[in-house]
Length: 111
Image (cartoon, rainbow, N blue to C red):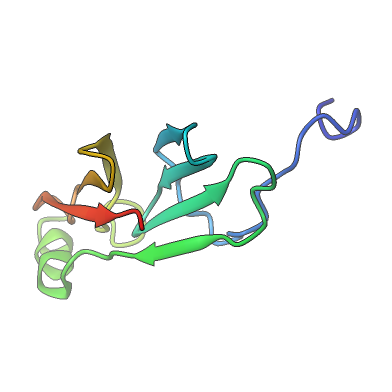
C-alpha cells in the first residue's frame, strides 16, 4: 500500500538479504544508521538511496570457522550481526556486533 500511494522510498542499496537489525536516527544531521549482517549503512533521510555510505565489518575468519565447527549455520548464524548503534558523542557512534558468537565493539567517526 505504501508503494502504491507513493508515500515511501524503498532502500535499494542492498539486495543481498543483509538481515537489518538495528537503527539509529540522527535527526540533527538528517541521517539514519542501519546495522545489518556484516555491514553498517549511513543513509540520507531525504533520499535513502542518495550518497549511501557502507562499512563492511565481517567477523574474523577464524571466528567464523569456530562458529561452524560448533554446529552453527555458516550463512545464517556465523556472521557479525550489528546489534548496537549508540551515540557516543557529537562525532562518534559506539557499535557492537555478534562477531560469529565472539562479540566485538568499536567506534565509528561520523565526519
